[in-house]
Length: 454
Ligand code: UGA
Image 1: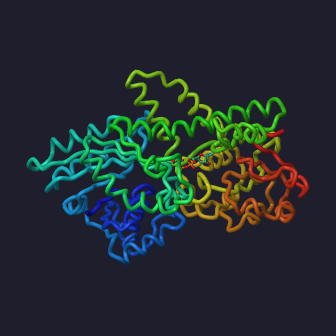
Image 2: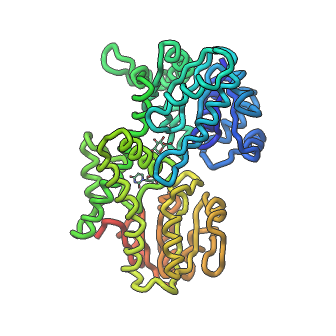
Image 3: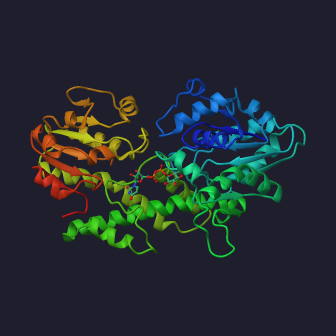
């Protein structure tokens, strides 16, 4: 069986490489010729730890190769994963034109029974539309079915996540679709079982098999959107608590630690700070609000989650203003541009809005990030002395009146704080992710300000 993966972005490429590593023959397609050439040459078009090794191995073994277009890939494959982008439109809804375009291209190149699997995050009922579109445009009456197999990969740990899924959701229309997808995932399930032989489940149960959830198409679509909306809700919840803590003189990091010890709440996604960014949480949240409203559901909770998140950058800038009093004419070093550590992705990163805000206020900026500088530079060009890119955190701190930490890269946790303070004009630190130890920062001479910490 051959697998096609259409769209080689942050979802498609790790997925394609994962499948090829599992032993399947995978054809990848992307409509960006530059990106396709790069991938074919064994170079990752974005930073994703561990992925380049899989790419080279896949290409060398011939199990992963590039197909010239959707038609060629569809003609060869039995299972076609659609992983194209679903960007946000001005009204917050998902722009599904790429999905629709791919559905039409697939329709024209059907040549036998095929399973078309929606993997991009799309609003509920998109799979029905894909089915309708392929039905309308197909040549002849070749059999096809649609399935939904949402991905839960996190950028920065996509390779690990592919091989260690918490769940595999299969939205299917028939036992044929289910069995085909189970066949695709069988090598992964076997691998997981081999890894977990020492941790058996309750008598008679197979903990690996229990990770597979077979549902209808609509349910699978909603599982994905609900998962991201819940994660976003946790973050906005703790950010709301952070504001309360700030006003009341309490410490949100201690509140979060205590909350997280309750297994019903759990410790993950309770890190207060400058808010969530990236290409998934903000966009998926808004798309879910839109589709929910269209379907007549009350989406007030998620609108509040979005509103709280949008206020985070303003709150951070106000914290900075409280420290510096007057912003105009000051120099600020920014540590971290990526929307989170482990990636060079800056889409919807809080850093973009912080930088825009501070430039408007007449602040000179010194920016550092271990991976994301090239991407950031494309959007915000260097403009010395108003805006300069730095090759180390110490350089970003040089002559600055304050440092603002926006991405919790592990290397920022290892900084020699005393050396950092020594090169600054005034050693002030606004920790937008609450990751540094306030006592250590103060001991090194810093005036330390967190978010939701006294
Ligand atoms: C998210 C989901 O976590 C994945 O499960 C999902 O597959 C993916 O979206 C997707 O839909 O493709 P990702 O966008 O890579 O993954 O990033 P997250 O790790 O979820 O972080 C999102 C944002 O939340 C980051 O800006 C991060 O800094 C922020 N965050 C996270 C917080 O502010 N506080 C936290 O406690 C956790």
